[in-house]
Length: 335
Length: 290
Image (tube, rainbow over all chains, first blue to last red; front, side, top):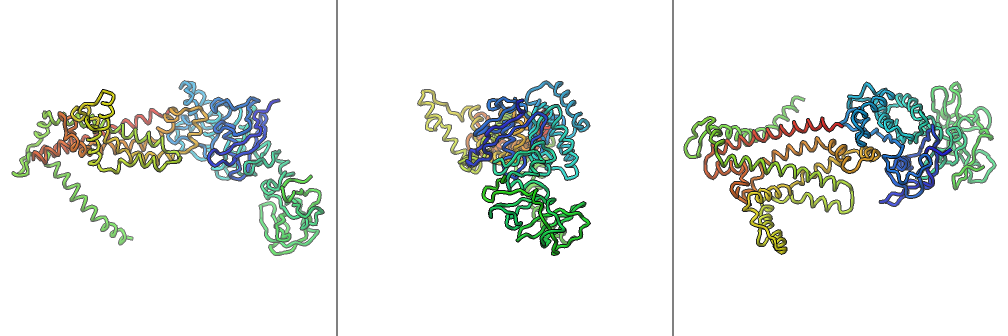
């Protein structure tokens, strides 16, 4: 089966500065799948989207859509629809005209435009808003209008750039669920860019972690959490992220420069060696303790009933089966 | 708080006084003179609407009205359109940015008088550059400023050169337009013209409307200096605009009543033209919503 979207050795270099925004990226998205792309700002996420939808030309490598090289396909003929960060709605156009914008550019006859907009607006529950202007909409409504405009193209691939970043946190959870279903409907696929790793792991079937234009890891959310491929991913993914400590500090038999990655739930408090509690953070049903291990924090997840104060000494040990070892120099996961 | 407010009122006072004495007062007095016959020597005689009736049947006034409208109708679209074109060409950051923008703005800081004198040379058929170049090819130009159409075009050309302010405003406005809207248009396959029609123009429309209104007001009043120096209203009154006629009547021929009446009509005309323009703009705005 050919992938819905594949990029092979994809790279893009800024013409002006000569720096690489993205380098040697190889990924694939299958039909009905959402690929979440996550990374700090400047990691090349948006560049990837722009390459996929055709706003940028690759400096090297290829973009394949349903197995076809997209190099010769202009943006308007790609089966790709982009949802821009901040939604990019036209302030002077009504919701109807905003949704129909692409159809107007393509000179689709008016009657046909109307019918198509009505259909899409019903799907996204914006049919009651068609005569309003963007200023009269809430954040969630704007987001749905932007999605409707993308859906009008009947794309095979959605490209979404931080689609939830301008919503308040409560709305975000709700919108994320709705989005999750819509993106996979009818065998569509999506590339979902976000800087929020929690959002990426909830929305994506696969999650790609980018850093300075390079792919650190692409994996299922579960795999990403359990076996971060690099110390960067270990520090980036998970709430809280992995604690990384020198092997010697935890008495792990390994080379001196090896870093040991430990998830908070793999630290057992109550037995083992004594550590000073440097910080306590309550999270509703649990609390996180930052234990001082030779000046570095080892975070442990413990039940709320455990009564611990900052400055106290607790006994703790790390589950040796669940630790990950990282090369101190390259940051790579050691087998 | 009240003391502060009272203080503000006192601060406003000089400005208010100045406006009353120098703008509102003279304007009202002029409006009053418009209904009189007055030669500044003997006391004004009330004449009512007879002044306006006489003006209407006055050939020179009618010609001035037409000249004004023709020149404004050519100059305003060219100046606003030219400013827009330059703004769209130069809004991207490139090398030599500062130089190109300075070049576009420069003519606006040169005094009208200097520009008028330069143009006297430019269009001179004997030793001006256009004359020299065209006669080298055996064609030559006639005495441009002695030809009604040529004189009008020269006046228009001079006023178009001072598009710098509109250009600056439009440059800033274009810079403010969000890039994602253009990206979106590109993903739908919009070319340069479609992009202009569906993105740039509607989003700049409010600014363009305001600039056009301002330009109309200025053009209806200010084309006086170049015409006075360049053609003195000629040939055959082709460039004798209403402000120039008001000046001539009032201060050269000492028919202050006539001059005041022309000025009053010019004010009404300006208001009318701006109102019509806003009406058109609103209708167009509604129509452009795809």
